Image (cartoon, rainbow, N blue to C red; front, top):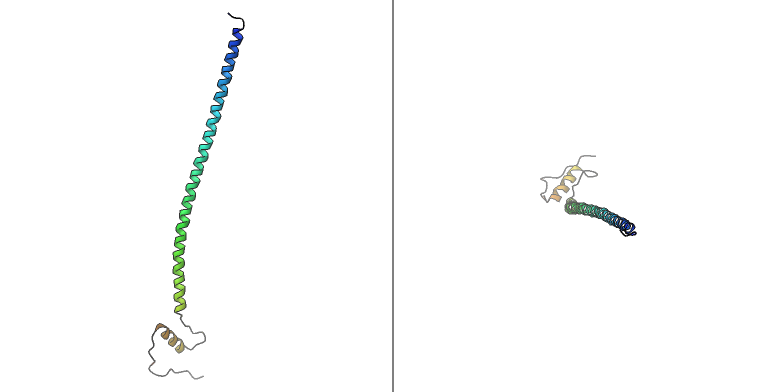
Length: 118
């Protein structure tokens, strides 16, 4: 046998093992990186779905609030257009006459309105 063939063969085997280990380590690191990237993408997709659901709920609630706001505004307008007089500083007959006039009842009382003597 050739005298320097044995050390060359050992060097070639060591180089092959080193290269194979280096290549396997690269594949291992790449697979870890790929797993991390896939996990990040899955988390981002889940967050986007959650935000989409929340935005749908907010949009639906806002549309309901706008409808309620319109109804409340109409109710306020009705209240302003149809006041009810109460006895704060008026006599009961005057309050009744004002409420009747506000409702559109313009019929006159049969007689004079009597006032109590002071």
